[in-house]
Length: 289
Image (cartoon, helix red, strand yellow):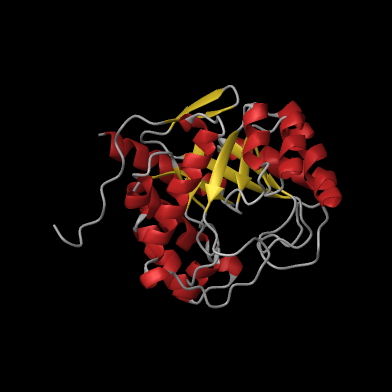
């Protein structure tokens, strides 16, 4: 029926992260955000100090995080962070996390050298918002046996994009094409299909309306094949929708998770792990019925 929401993917689906095999046929994987940055858009440096980050990680794991995602550079514009500075931020943190928790660790970086060092420290997933702009990124992941996230972005990380436009005004088609291409690149680099995740990149070179359109189209994007990651937590498009400041977006973020999961998203990257865990566990029971 025209206009009906897309059905969620129901074929068996697993994601391999290091030695962990996560079944995401119905139950979405919850990725907890850990920002080792002094200027992150959400926590404004609350977990920049290593001790603070480790305490936050302990809480996220207790709340039910399946994966911990560590980033040392925020996605948006800001002061320059050199590769050396990023290494200093993420590598010691990942080594500590890997020694303390039996959950997969992800490194949120678009630099191949940082990803490679993170894999050596214990990370098993490279979360790259640049869409593999670094030509050595996939090689580093393949050499380490790591998994990867391919994200759509129109320009590049840290570059302001005030007027994003897409061919024929079709943002969904543009994202779909790019993600299919990045999947092919990952497979060509020797990374198994069950080690690839795709992300539509909400807010990354998209207007609020375009981000909402992509959220609605999650079912279509999930049909590309690999698990689809939803990173909507506390983002600008939710604030624009309801006129909310950053710390007023909890319920809107949970609503986005619920919609995304019912339409096919199987990894959700969030700040509120406890609330999200309850949402996705309820949905798993409903979707599996």
